[in-house]
Image (cartoon, rainbow, N blue to C red; front, top):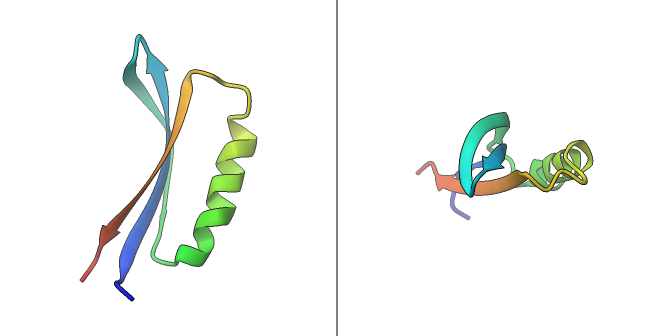
Length: 60
C-alpha cells in the first residue's frame, strides 16, 4: 500500500469558478475519509454553489 495524504475541501463556486475556500481537512489515514466526507455532506447539503472535492497525494 502506498502512503498518502488524503484531503477534503469545500469551495464556493461563482460563475463557474472557485471563489472561496470554505473548509479544508487532511488525514494520512484513509479510514478517516468516509467520516470527513459525511461531515462535509451534512454541512453543505442543499448548497448548490459548493463543491466538495477530495484528493490523495502520495507521501513516499
